[in-house]
Length: 367
Ligand code: MRU
Image (cartoon, rainbow, N blue to C red):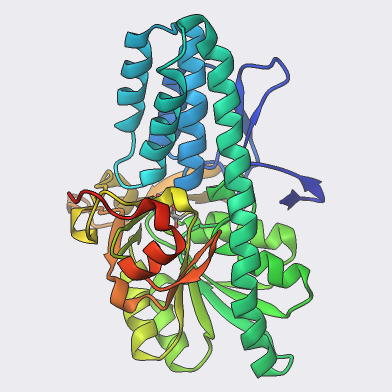
């Protein structure tokens, strides 16, 4: 996607042919800063500290991190240790483990002296695959938006989204935003309600940033506004991303997604979840088995922002001494999900729906 007219991806191989460039997303929206990842430790830090975040981008970064690890030591032991270390960095997004298993399968059978080149090549393929999956999600989701647009006779289609499931969360296009970008580029009038998404503000800081740079009309709303907007008839559909979908169609996504799904159900607003196949965890039977990341209390107790003079500062926002809890994801039960928008098409959030799109990957074992 474009920033100031210039095409960008979220991750790239730098000109030296080995270090990995990323956008430091902790600096957005106040500064657009690219940084280099030069070893597995820096890549792990980028994932854990959310310099990169969003399920598909976490996976793409982990794949490159394995390549960086192989440059230093390409032995069997180093390969298995790097994969185990990277897998620990964030627990909920299954794309992290998916990408690491792809790397393990590609590299384990090779002789150590072949692993560096093969790792970079597999990491690049994972990125290209994500771009194509997200593009297709956009094409498949576009039909849903186009249908609503036709019914509304030229009035903008009002779409609510939560967190950032845009191109910044993937390699390009985004998952939830890809249908929106495709609709916008096709000349369909759209307007996006952007949940600010406390505590890390991925909506206000990232989704609004990328929609704004693409020219998509949008409005940031406080997380609690969604139900009210739906009651008033100001939301035609909700599209969110996901960090992991279990084999029965339950959806793990950023904390607060479940409340949006409940409000959507109560107001007959269609609630869609957009995802590539790499976000489906066929090994877990239901959302109850998906680990929920618990992040630092400070993310709730403090906020950062830009002063009028330009300096970015962090401030305390809570009663001094009060503790805080920070579960980072929640589970939306499949029954509240109208449909899953995937690179293969739109399907029901159920084992039948998933199996019909991915007959080759039917659940074989359950956690
Ligand atoms: O904690 P984050 O910012 O990594 O959480 C991201 C989300 O929850 C996204 O909605 C999800 O990864 C889908 S991304 C295409």
